[in-house]
Amino acid sequence: MPSFGMGGPTSMFGSSMGRPLNRGGYNAFMGGGFGGNMSMFGGMRGEDALAPAEIPSPTFSPPPSNEPAEGAEPTAEQKAFAAKRRLRMLFLEKLGDGSVLIETQLPGQAKIAQAAGVKGIIAMPSSDGGNHPFGRRGGGGSESLKDHELLKFIDAVALPVITHVRVGHTMEAKRFEKLGVNMLEESSKVSAFGDLQQNGDVVINKKEFYTPFMAGVSSVKEALRHVKRGVVFLYTKTGDGSGDCSSTIKGLRNIHDEINTIKDMDDEELDKYVEEHKVDKDLLLKVKEQGRLPVPLYASGGLLTPVDIAQVRLIGCDGIILESSVFQVLDPVDNVSMLIRACKEYKNAQTIAELSRNFKTNMPSVGGGGGGSGGFG
Image 1: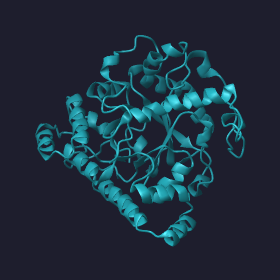
Image 2: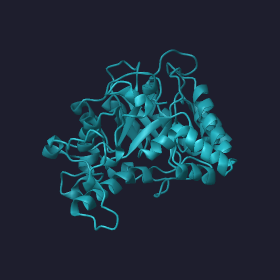
Image 3: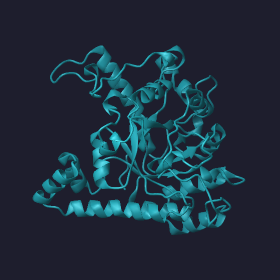
Image 4: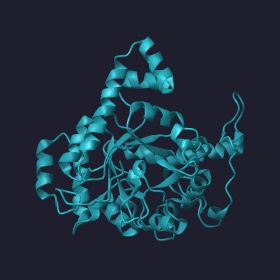
């Protein structure tokens, strides 16, 4: 797959940075160059984190101050907003092809993930006991982290932090943005406003935010609708949480089958597709020309072994999201490190065989055991 990174395989969030000494973890560490309270990605800490967020209009239209009128010189406020957005987007640019993100339900797991070499953590609530983790929002669950819980993850590691926000809950998203979260996921099913969002009527207007958004998808048409709304990062939401990645593999193949169908469409068929599925034609044309989705797509759901990760990478995805059940071994650092290597060297069968021999498989959701965290997909 084409790389979306601009900095090569080495992450800007690598271990050479060292452990942050002051409160604020990753964001405090990056904040020195911006006057102390502002993170590199635009998040505010301290008193600024408590400042009331601007109340959105009932129609969720973007604030006029965020985007200058056509041909007009941007104001100081508009320039500051654009600068914050560019800084937050560096997170995605530095991921690169073959990166790994990981779900964490405890700050201690986040520290393990950092030691293993992941590029970012997904902070999720643990009060549900793993029954409705972040990645299974397509199947239910309604929790998002409390402020003090989220800050524990941010303070624990020098890594970007991603977390879930309820569908349509603009104020919750604004609050998390002020706390310094590096990316937000608007759950695919959980809505703050009932079932209206099922028809796409009530979603957060991403143009109000300098923090990027991610979303789960199971088809190209769904992906294009999300991208049109401002989503810049996608993951597969096909995993069933059983520890068996077959549904993830099947869903990923379905997406690629749909892409191949679009590549063969003529102009009349493209127009019919746009009308039938209510997607943006320019985005559809990008899919036809490039043979892929216009933003990164990560595979998620039941990916717990080197061979399974290599398989989905061969099918076609830009990276992997690991679920939190990978921590359920005596030495999870080694296991996670091997999964990261499998994601990078997936074309080398000898490497995958060696990783598989050394991989610990006594996790509850590997090899037929029950449970597991369920998966981000």
